Image 1 (cartoon, rainbow, N blue to C red):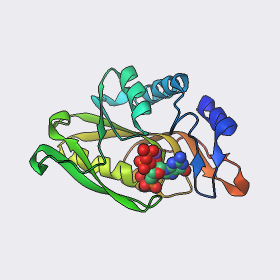
Image 2: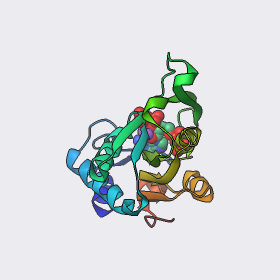
Image 3: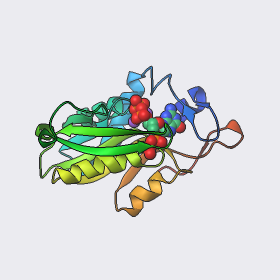
Image 4: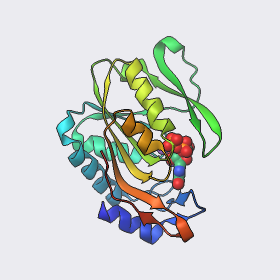
Length: 194
Ligand code: G4P
Ligand code: NA
Ligand code: NA
């Protein structure tokens, strides 16, 4: 997605060989026009999948998930990372470990917002090791629903999340794929590998 790549070139900061800072339009301040274009692009790419609900995880996945859901005319649910006070019978729960942050979160979705037989589009802002997306997919499976696609705003193709998800059979569409941050510069890979 050229508009997104241009924004990354202009406003992204390579922090080190693994992390891209994009807090001026995605992770802290949000650019609504760009976010609408991102939602439109996800809706276009997953138009043939019969999505009935969008699922993301708080917090930075929510904006892109919202605009995608708006364009797909479905509701969006965000999984929560804080341990819920609710009993397990009322919520789907899974552990998600972040290698980037070296922490494990107990991710929960209330059962009443994710029924069986849904066609779920998972959306997230970054794809690194794929732990968050795998966790969301486990929750969808627990609910007896189907993951029809995984939409990612920025995929770091040099980490193995994309490979893991695609090898697990998921259709992954990333709007920007980064091959490397070598020399402090963002180098893009080809966008989408099914
Ligand atoms: P994974 O799910 O693919 O395994 O990713 P990982 O655990 O490594 O990511 C942990 C957090 O770090 C996620 O945010 C993710 O979006 C973010 N992240 C990973 N790589 C980058 C990067 O290069 N740049 C930026 N800006 N963020 C990155 P989170 O903890 O869920 O926080 P939130 O932003 O959604 O609140
Ligand atoms: Na994030
Ligand atoms: Na995220």
